[in-house]
Image 1 (cartoon, rainbow, N blue to C red):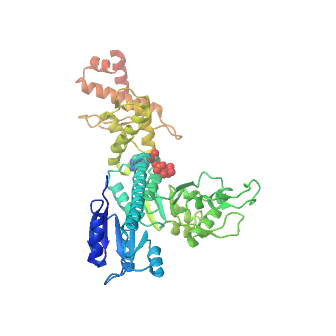
Image 2: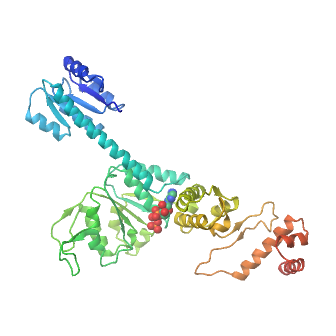
Length: 462
Ligand SMILES: Nc1ncnc2c1ncn2[C@@H]1O[C@H](COP(=O)(O)OP(=O)(O)OP(=O)(O)O)[C@@H](O)[C@H]1O
């Protein structure tokens, strides 16, 4: 069972001793004769609750309470007053005192008040622990070992502390912008509030305004009879995440700007100004600076959204992250598909590192998902992940040192005959290297008849 720590801050020694005697055994008790010495200790090791006399010498109880609130916003404080002075009690309650007791102290009453206060401390701690467990279980694990992503995360932790500073996250598709927006939210003072995502590219142009700002009843034909809250309103006290913000139309851009500048807006068809307290995080993979040059994105909105700007490096720029993230995905998909992969073959690792990750981490995720789903055994092989083969023979001569590279098939097409020729040349050279130039052994390695091998060798070297 937890034993809570209670501090008594009272200049009357007899009161400190009296309360200590009465509560000893149930609680850990600490005593201070003045507010200043209690405040000095509170930063290092705060108690679970403070009994604070109002009429202290030097700094009085009200002033001390103000300081305590600055240091520990949620620490429960029960104030002790010499007589029921309404003004003093009101001031203390306004500063967030949990309750008050009047001298002379009746122990039974004090015990009941303490019990209630500590019960709420316990409940708050339980809620916090559940919340942390929820985040651990529900937030995809963020893996980042490269210096560049570590710098980004250190910066994110610093800027998350403010509850309302707008943040603009830039980066190629699939680099983890949404995951980083979640990280900001859960590290911010708004973490208990909602995280509302608006995919600006997915909402039809004619609905974006009513989706964002809501509408009053009868605002337009087809509107619900009761009206509707907008997503901005849903994000009250939390975070509004505007994904693909570069896709907002000019009208919605103007309205969003007004909301960011004045903190207020109207529902569609409404005349009441509404206010919402939320942090706006936006993200895009588009080049907003170029869009501003052509007038496709408002400059004033850009400056409002990008009070803090975070650029997420592409996966190709942080190769050190590829294998740790791949291993995290192996773990995740093992659980999903009830498999027991332990890692990747060295060739599969090489292929992952050598690959050009146009779709960034999303592409890597898909690739590992496929490997775990279709593969057999307990190591993921190159053929399971369906990647282009990127081989570099060891100890090869200068000519064969050139990588054999099978590019992905895109709309631009590929040169199939050229690739076939390259592949054949590569394997014939490799087979001869491995067999020390023995043609029949080399043919066997390639599952070719010796005369076919000779024919192809001759053809390719001519
Ligand atoms: N550092 C990381 N560690 C582990 N998983 C990650 C990491 N970054 C991103 N992911 C995963 O990669 C996938 C894509 O991430 P996310 O959706 O956040 O990218 P995005 O940049 O917002 O993409 P888009 O621009 O297409 O909206 C998600 O499944 C996400 O959980």
